[in-house]
Amino acid sequence: MSQELIDGFLAAIPLPSVLVDQTERFIAVNLEGATLLGPQIVGRHFATILRQPSVTTAIEQCLVDRKPRVARHLSNDGAQDTTFEVTLRYVQGLGAVKGGAVLICFADVTDRETASQMRRDFVANVSHELRTPLTALMGFIETLRGAARDDAAARDRFLSIMEGEANRMNRLVGDLLSLNRVESEERMRPKERIDLIAHLNSTIKSLAPLAEQRGNILTLDAPALPVEIPADADQIQQVFTNLIENALKYGGKKVSVVLTVLDRDPALRCAAVRVQVIDDGPGIDPVHLPRLTERFYRADNHRSREMGGTGLGLAIVKHIINRHRGRLRVESDLGKGATFTVILPQ
Ligand code: ADP
Image (cartoon, rainbow, N blue to C red; front, side, top):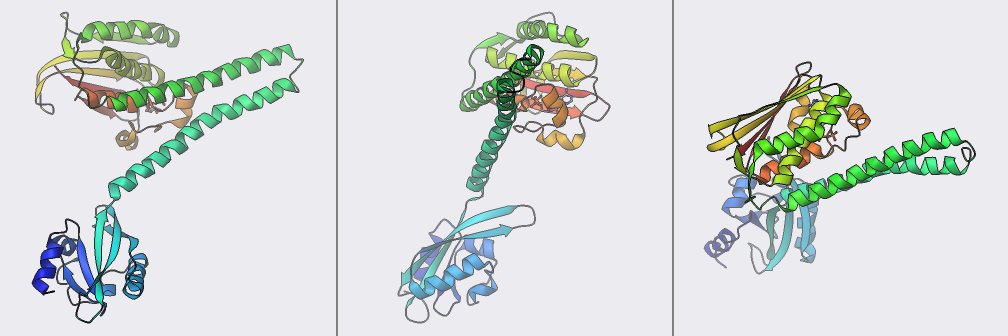
C-alpha cells in the first residue's frame, strides 16, 4: 500500500492514531495523533515517544504475536490529566519490512473514568453515612437486651437516642430519594407559573417555630405585589427551606430573606428575580466555597452532624436551580456571616 493511501486511511480515523511497523518505528500518524504525541514522529522509534510501560509492552507483544490488545495511556498537558484507552490492532502487509504494522488508536475516556470514580465515591459515602447510625442502633439493641434490660431509666434514655439515629437515617434516605428525583427531572423545564412571594411567605411560616426555638429573628423583605416566575412550586419551596434552615442552623441571630426583581440579570441575560438569604453567623472559610454544593461536603463536619445535617441539602438546591436555568452564588468569610444568592429567570 502506498504511503499516500496509508496516510489517507489514518486521516479518516477520528481518533489520535499511529502505525508502528516491524522496525519498531512510526510509519504514519494522523493529525489528531500529531497533536497528542508531537510533530515529526514518523521514522522515530516508538519507545522514544511512548514511554509508559503498559503501552510499550502492548506494542512489543502485538508486533510478535499479532493479537489485539488494550492498554492505558495517561497524559498531562500541564493543566489537567487525561486518560486514554489505547487499542492495538495488527494490520497485515503494511510497513517497510514484510509482516505488517500495529495500528494504535487513543480514545479519551477521562469523562467515563471520572463518572465511574464519582459513582464509587458516592456509594462509599452513602454506605458510610448509613453505617454510622446503624452501628449505634445495633449497639443500643444489644445493650437493651443485656445490661440495661431491667433499668427503666437507661431504657428510656437509650430509646430516645435510638429514635434520633433512626430519624437521621430516615432524613438521609429522604434526601437521597429527593436528589435522585431532582436529577432525573433536571432536563425538563418547569411550565407552571407561581407567585414566588406567596411561596417564600409559606416557607418562612413553616420555619418560624425553628427560628423561635433557636431565638432567631427571621425577616422577609419583598415587593408588595406578587412576583410570578416559571417554577416547580414544591422544588422552589425545597430550595428556600434548605437555605433558610441552614442560615438558622449555622448562622447567628439574624436571618433576612431579601427578594429583588431585576429588569435584566447580566449572567442570565433576561429579566430575573434575585433572592438572598443572609445570615450574620460565623460564616464559611472561603476555601470551602467552591465545593460546598458537592454531595456530602461539609464545611464543618462536627457541627453539621450535631445539627442532624445529611450533607445533601445544597447539592439538592444546586440541581433544582439548574433545572430552573438559574444561578446560585455563595459569598462568605469567617466571622462575616454568609449570603446565599439565588437568581431565577422570570
Ligand atoms: P448539611 O446537611 O450538612 O447542612 P448542606 O449541603 O445543606 O448540608 O450544607 C453543606 C455545608 O455548608 C454544611 O455542612 C455547613 O458546613 C455549610 N453551611 C451551609 N449553610 C451555611 C451557613 N449559612 N453558614 C455557615 N455554614 C453553612
